[in-house]
Structures are given as C-alpha cells and as structure tokens.
Length: 244
Image (cartoon, rainbow, N blue to C red; front, side, top):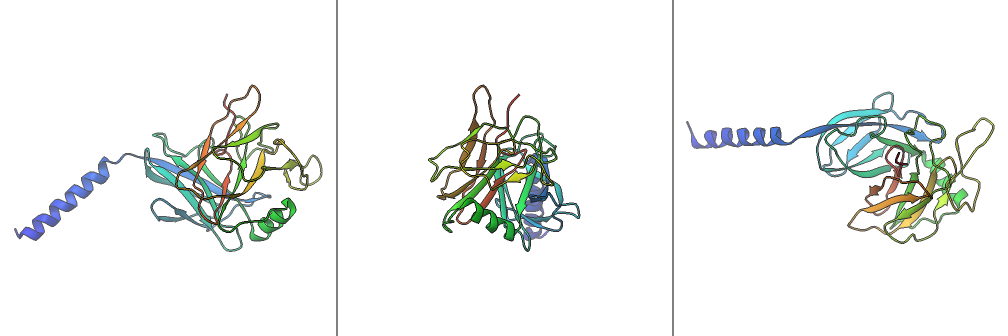
C-alpha cells in the first residue's frame, strides 16, 4: 500500500481514537427576553472558546450539545433587535450543565429596552468596558419562579467596583407584579427581584469572580469573561445562588 495512504489511515485512526478518549457531558439551556420572558426563537449562539455556532429552537431552547468535561464554556447570543448577550464562564462538570438548577440560560433585553434601562439607571457606558447584570438567586429558584431573587444581599466582586452596583426593586402590585422595577434608585441591597447592574468594568485577561454577602447565608460564586463592549448577564441558575 502506498505510504501516503498508510499515513492517512494511521492519522485518521489516531484522530478518531483521540476524540473518543475525550469525555464529554451534555450542555443545554434556553433564551428568554427581559422583562416579559418571551421565548427567543432562532437566535444564534456562539461558543466563544471554540467558535462553534448553534441555534435556539422555536421555544428558545438549545442543546443538549456534548462538551468536554473540565473545560470552560462561555456562550454569546445574537439576534436582530436584541442586545448581544454573553453568559458567565463555566467549567463543565461530569454531570453536565443540563438540568433546571445548572443549565445555562439567557435573559436578553431588546435593544430598545436595554438603552431605555441604561437611561433610567443613569449609566454612562464606556464602549471600552464590559457591563454586567446578575441575579442574586434564592435557594432552588430558576427563571420559572417569580420572583427568584434573594433579598437583602450585597454583591461582591474580585476587583474594586468602578461605581456602586445598581440594585433593582420589584413591582409589588399591578400587571407587572413580581417583575423587575428599575425606577427605584438608591437601593444598597437586593430586593426580592435579586437583580443588579454593574457598568464599566475594565476588561482583563483573567476571569472576574462574583458572589454575594448576607448575614447567616452562604452563596455560590460565578465567573465571567470581561471583554471590550460585552454585555454579560448571569441569569438564574448560574448567577450567585443561596447554598442550602
């Protein structure tokens, strides 16, 4: 047999065996709009570590995809009329990221609502920075719960905040009862909504770590990749969450 054919077969065999040796786990999730929770269908999701692109289905769901165990994964969602939104960065565990309390979710504002929200908050965006939203989540809550936040918690970050975090209030009555209320200013801690915004974080090579503090309560931590101009939303269940 010709040497080049032998080499090609050997290379193919080695590659196949190498791929087979990589252990993977399922990763899935869904995308919904902020504030109303509309399913975002046919959106493009990019795995930033690999460049691979996938789509959400007609109900805004994606996956499961098989991803190497122990490797980091960061997703970014793009769709016309929505603010491009990035998730946190997660190390895929052996059980995967595939259940209601550990999947990856997107909570994505429309372009219009994003800039309206920025104006209400009074933020002046630096295009060279990243901007982060997060929900400090109560124990065993997901985006299907309304509200889902842990009240009276303060956000902590692995770097000094450029300005105090903006904490969201919650509507107590009316058609938006249980939904995010961005009009109350000056809150120093989370409401039952659990939501907050941090604008103008400087990009850096290492990941930022975000957690929360509340007397007598322990929280998980989350990490995110701050890239120039990125909007990152650490939505439940992948933001800081109360530990049992």
